[in-house]
Length: 411
Length: 207
Image 1 (cartoon, rainbow over the protein chains, first blue to last red):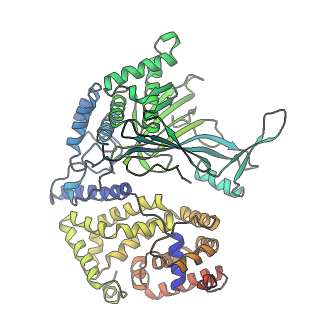
Image 2 (image 1 turned 135 degrees about the vertical axis):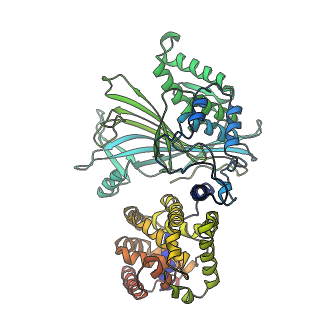
């Protein structure tokens, strides 16, 4: 029977958790300990309330919120200094999640809670980004993007699939060094658990049939579910980000928040406005939110640029804290949303742009945008049968490394 | 979590360790931060157990929750009297939390049954024999695990993945030791039947 146990143990073995996941788990416990220690007046003062308290506003951060909302022009360095002061027990080293080896309540973090205002959380994110320095030959940045959904008309039980692609950049620290660019087509995945079950009941096909091709030659449109092998190719040291608003040379974007905001507004106005005329304020805000959040999620921007981008976002009106949410990689975070009625039908259609932060480290987990009909809850209706568009990107790696570049190899 | 558990612990696990766990927990009643020591000692094991049953992503959340639940209910553990087994208690909490995700768990086993050879991560400590046999029998094992009754699956995986002994399993699940034995017997019978009644070690003897 030992042999069977061994086989089961081997079959079920998984890689250990990431340092990030393990330290986040420990921090959740030490937060809880700090709360109790404070309540009982033992073991040192807790610096903050329970993270898992109700998601409504607590008033605890009220003064700081008022102050920071007025601080849209705050420089990234000033914002970072504040956040560093607030997160003394938590400041990471080398741009990686802090291993958090310190035990006890003294080690509990003290940044804004997950229910804090978007501005507070975004300023904390600016601070985190500012500290993303470290040693290593390359800045390695891996993101996975999903778009869709595509509807598979599989008989009585149609299901929806999302297209997935990975993009990885290895930007040389040395400006004269060789940088690399990795790409991998990850095929498709069923959009939700319900879609997955429907796909399984359809026999878990590796190739799905989307229906007849709209072509005089006939034929059918099919898509392959399985990932393809990744590729690795040489790239320029100063990457250009192909944004929805045209290509942006990262090295040319200002790292001062005021100047960055001006540059973004100029670009958005040029691309979206008619003849250089500024678009309406709501549209301008949405475009700024999209351009910067997607830049943060998809481009290997420097720490200074990332920090400036978060600082600009923190001053953007209309952004709301939408509470706990999972990113496209199913990681828990807090969602900061900006919505805009898109004018197609008397407020019946809307666009929702979303940015998901890790509420303990304030690192950006991912971004998402959805547009479609407005559902009963006022959000974009993404239930089965409705027609909507969705696109999401998650950041899986953002770190300095001495590793040699390899082609992405995700499943 | 009765007193006798401690003295009948299996060979390699020292009673001294269980006593040290217990004193750490007792100390945490007055000095809450001492509880972090139990996290450092057992989080890797608990997470490994949860990952075995739910995969890595869900396991991160579940393993973190185990220590929050344990911290909040530590007074109740202590109130049950001396001689309690902290490790078994943590595995018991983990098992309860894992049950809430049984659909994910069963989906994982079905996916393992479908996966082609070489898709599964292997633990370094495992013998080559077991690895080869496991690869050969993956589909049968995955299917059998997905169909085991919950109680039998809990007992089997606490032993196979958590490496608890019978007494600890009894403490973790809050059932008599005799019941552990009968659940394990039934579960192993199912597994063996799924493997075609062969001795799995035979598979690679010819290679």
